[in-house]
Image (cartoon, rainbow, N blue to C red; front, side, top):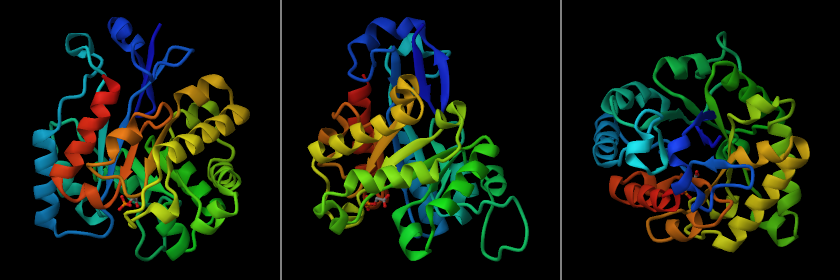
Length: 297
Ligand code: PGA
């Protein structure tokens, strides 16, 4: 039976079998990884701009087939997530109501409540409509001194609430130039996702974001991205097994835009994108979504 991974949920879509067999994302084990495009809005925009952007994306975004209508549509299109600042989660949730857009928080604290001035918990993010949480973004690691150990606690907190973590890993330029990329992303991944059961790991989305590519306009080449993604998949296989490695989605992030998305997303191990700057304009974000839909079709 064909299993399709989306939002960490596996569901059977027997009717899509023939169509999906032609997709590069059908692995030997019959797993299909549904591409996931997430917009990381970072600390940008006003409330009304957030509503406007979310509404524009929700209105224009193509419909993703759900279990009930998948056979009729016959297309496995990308999953779309927007991650506004946490203070705008609720209004963006309202603006995207009834659409296929899912919501993500950009960070949470690992405790569920308490004396943590300025923080929000996974429970609170969920309460405001989030089903994903970005964790371990390089800006959090660098500017807010987040360690793998700290991110690991957050991963558990997020999974504990039934949300899906998007766990970011990535090397700085110096590490790449000294040939340490795989060692660095391996250590970040294993440290951040330590102790996860198979079932928990299947709900994690990994985002490979080379730090030198974030916000710089200097994007990794498709070959560079593919190489690290396939190495990360091997790390997952070594820790778990082939099934988990085949099922976990690995996004690329770092200067993804409307012009370069298509080539990146066509790489067999690139299962989507985590998009910063280009997610702040509905037009460019939707071009990236369209590129992902093409690879999924
Ligand atoms: P960028 O950001 O697309 O602006 O490089 C990506 C990210 O930080 O997730």
